[in-house]
Length: 146
Image (cartoon, rainbow, N blue to C red):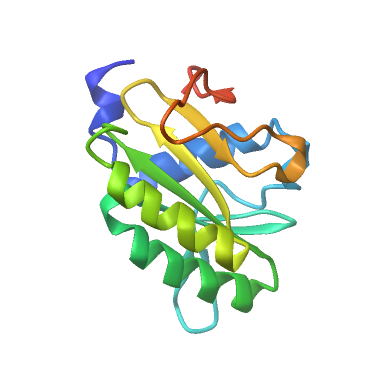
């Protein structure tokens, strides 16, 4: 992974993850590689046939939860969050908080290790395995093609 990937903005990650998700039909059709605007000018990062997904840095987890709720309602989709982390160890408390809320609120949660461009999945939705936050193991999907 290059230093360039680590310095990408959230919008860069959203665009690239949207392209990546096109290869995985279990999330439904991805409508655009760009943000989608709602009537109130809010913008969902990734909109699929089934999901409205907010992409945010791990330390902004609470903001991501609120946005995921809004976008899910506006677009009549299931809610999803993709958290970006430079270090799972340093971001552990944020990831734990988000995971706790997402489990209670039925929000799909993914983590991206931006240093390796690897995607981890929480929950068994879409038949994907669920890693433990304390023993991440191997990624469920690699974003190495980015």
